[in-house]
Image (tube, rainbow, N blue to C red; front, side, top):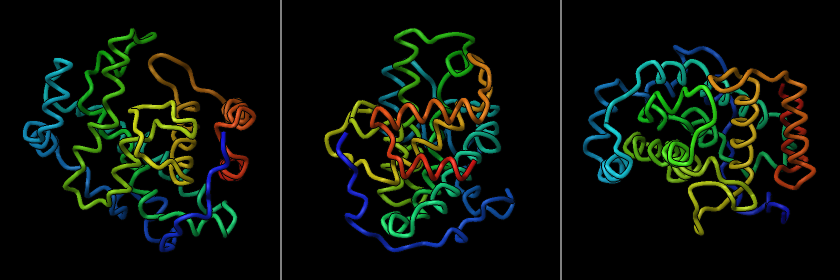
Length: 235
């Protein structure tokens, strides 16, 4: 995989203290989650969401249990891991990342899962082809749900394409999305937290086993050494 151009397109540096690592009440990102009724209203009125739901025979109904699980579990853990990875990067690499955008994207990357049927989200076993196709819609659904939440275009891009990778083999496919260091940190933080969490279809990995999996991605060129080193220092 070609080396990611870390030093291109520098952005304004935002300090990590802009968004607290801990403290659910003080975290300003929580204000953007919205209530069940607010989310369902957006789902009923957003043209792209309506198109996706109709195509896959889904409904504009929020899974409240999943919303709370994400908010106080995986999303928060991924956000904190991404923040720590950012803090453990060399100074010159930090200057290429908008920390606020990275934090928002990490906190909301799986937001669209609240519209995915629970029978697919928590299936005890491997998803079949049609179920996997439905599951893949969560990233675009999340970006569409958040369009009017005062997020930057780049934050929405990171949410929509957080399953992309440096080789361009992720989803949804796009020739225009610019994969960068912020994308890689989000992807690695998300994957690490997914590996160490217990899910309906798998047990939880130990920290060392999860790092071993991601170390293999470094060897294959899917993850840069700098990002892996930042993760290892963070966990």
